[in-house]
Length: 134
Picture (tube, rainbow, N blue to C red):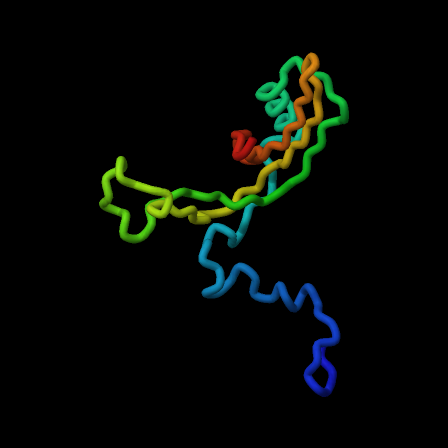
C-alpha cells in the first residue's frame, strides 16, 4: 500500500507471493506442484542419524526435527572448461549450480558418547531417508 506521494506504507505477503513459481522467473519447473507429504517419518530420520553418528550415545537433549527445503546443488564444469582434462582442472573450472529443491528433515541431536560430545545437525530426505548433509 502506498500513500498519495507513492511512498510505501505497508506490504502484504499475499501481494509478494502472487505468481510465485509461475512465469519466466521460475527456472526450476520441479518447484511447481512441489510434494510436501513425507514418506519417511521424523522419528525414522532421527533414528538413522543417531545410528550413523553415535549409536551408543546418550541424549543430552531430546533430538529435534523440523521440515526444511534445501537446494540440491550440483558441481559442474564452468564455461570454457568442458573439454579440459580432469587432471588440469582448477577451482575456477568448476561451479555449483542449483538443480532443484527437496523436502527434508533437519535433525538436531545433542549426545554424549563416552567422554566425547556428539552434537550433530543433519539433513535427511523425506522421500527416501538418504542423508543430504551431515
